[in-house]
Image 1 (cartoon, rainbow, N blue to C red):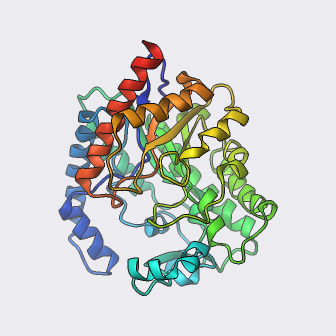
Image 2 (cartoon, rainbow, N blue to C red):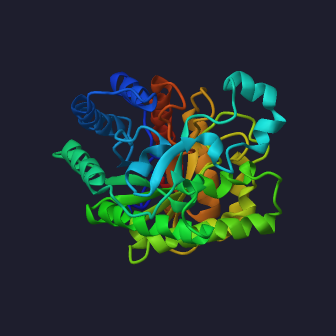
Image 3 (cartoon, rainbow, N blue to C red):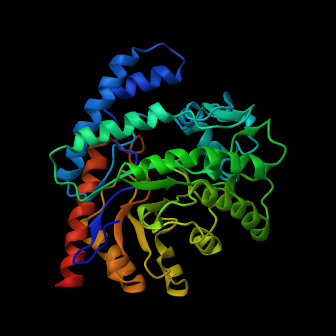
Length: 377
């Protein structure tokens, strides 16, 4: 992975705004309607081509394919055997304590809330069947970057603990279920690294499942719950180089009060157990910006990188570059400037308007340049 050797390098958390036509086709698929798959494949290919250039144009160093081939969370059920779609309410974790506390708000935001969309339901043995899908992702991304000067390229993939929040009706134990997902996803993780890309592991489930467990567990109980999922992830990462892996967590991309979020200090050591070279986390939104202080008491392991979010998907306000710079300098002062990468709280695709998302990326790049000038002179 690239390091901030003479300036703060820039990246983001993965999902990027889709082109309008592709977005509409994705929505049609979610509704169960037939779509022209050949046309959709071409829209994905062209979209990846364009979004690679957009990322470079706004000054991002480590870029990806925008996750354009993926429509919804359930997509990974198409890359692993043993799953069928089930109503969101089939998952034991389908509600959140935050949604109960602010029920009037969520009923207005999501009319009829009680579960949106579908979740993967495990009904048979899990094996990886996504070889064609990941090959297409890799081929599209490589074709889009041909002839361009790209400092670093990454592709995201789901972590077992986050994907494994659906219903399990096949495996005898939760541990067997999670390790089966890790075993299957190992093939995709390896394919990304073998293709020459950095692998990003998306695991919002590490912090945000806390709010979905009713009644609220003790911190000790939740840490045991989370540690099993980290062990399943590390099983999926076995034999892969840490310096080609980064790990992303967030407290969920849903817009809401987030007053029930688990504090970073209660899980930071668990996050650092993941066999990765870089850790990406929310650091810009109003519930978590203060948690830079966690790193005053928690040592970032030698050789590891930290990618705090310095612009957020949780607000339509575009952060001022000076604020971005201040956030980066704050982290540089506690973990070392060479160990900091400027990132986003979460993926921007579908969370803010596309024009606002790209304005935030520009602010991120400009703020990183300001911070670099002050840190390196």
